[in-house]
Length: 394
Image (tube, rainbow, N blue to C red):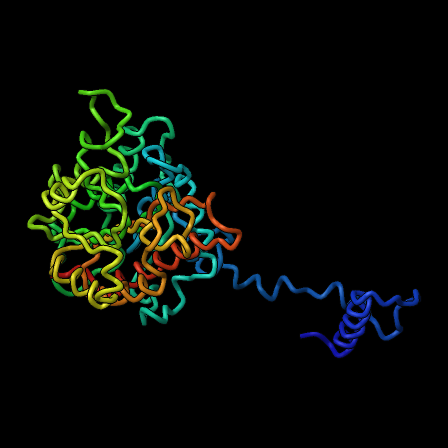
C-alpha cells in the first residue's frame, strides 16, 4: 500500500495536472517539500501482480473469448480439451464481395469483451464450468488453390475431432466409436468451408441435421447457376452457394428433410431451386416468418425438424439484418435482429450440438464501431453455451 506521504504527493500532483489540463497557467516553482518524488515514481508495482501472471489467468494474445491459446497442430498436439476454436481464412469462392478470409481475426477482435470464464446471463451458464475451450489459431490454407485449401481445412478439422475430449460423461457417447470427442467452433471464411467441416463430423457421428442460419439457401446444383462464367460442359467447382448440394450427394446430411434453413430472403435463379432444395433435404423458414410466428414459432419449427438427431449449426452472418451486421459479402435487407437470434439460440438448449461455424464475416466492410465482428463473437459465445449445456450422450 502507499504510505501517507506518497498519497499526499499523488493528490498534489493530480490537482496540479488537472488544473493545467483546463488551460490555467500555473507558476513555475519547485515541488512542495511534502512531495516525495522518489517514493511516487519508484513504487514497486510489478511484484504485486507478478504472481498472478500465469498461463491460466493471462496470455496477452487476442484469442476468441480469452480462451487459452494452444498449438493444436504442433507442440501442444496431445493436450486434451473439450472445444477447439479454429480459424479458416478462406474466401476464394465468394460470388460478390471478397474479404471473409479476414473473418477469423475480426471475430476474435470482436470477442475482446467476452470471456469463456464469465457468466452468460442470457444462456444462464458459465462455459468454463463445463468445457475446456482452447483457441487453435488459424489453419494455414493456400490462398491460390481452392481444392488444396479445402483439403487442408478438412485434414485439420479431422485431426482435432479425432482426439479424446478432456471431459467424459455418464452414459454412452453418440459418437460411432463410443468415445467422447472434442467439438470444434470454426470461424470463417466463406461458407464453402462448411463442406470439409461436415466431412470430419460425418467420420465421427455419421449424417447430422444441419440448422443453417442464412439469407441464401446454398443448395444450388452447380450446373443450374444463372449467368455462370463457366463454359458449357465444364466441371463447376464447389462454391459458397452450392456446398450443401455436394454435402447431400456425399451422404453428410440427415435424410428425410431433417435439415432447416432459417432467415431465407434472397432472390432465386428459378423456381426449380425450391424443388432442388427439398431434394437436398431441407425445409425453409423465411425471415418473414419471424413477423408472422415470432421467434417462438421459428424455434418450434427448428426443433420439430431436427428432432433428436445430432445437430451441426452453421451461421452465415448475412442471416442477421445488415443494419446490425453490415460486414459481409452478400448482404440482404430484412434479416434477423440480434435480439431474435439470441432468443432463438437460448431455446435450442438440449439439442446435441456436435459442432458449429460462423462464416462470411468480412471486417473490411464493417463500421468503425466493429458492429459485425461483435455480433458474430457474441453469437459464437452463445454457441459455446449450448455445447456446455448438453453433453453428447445417448
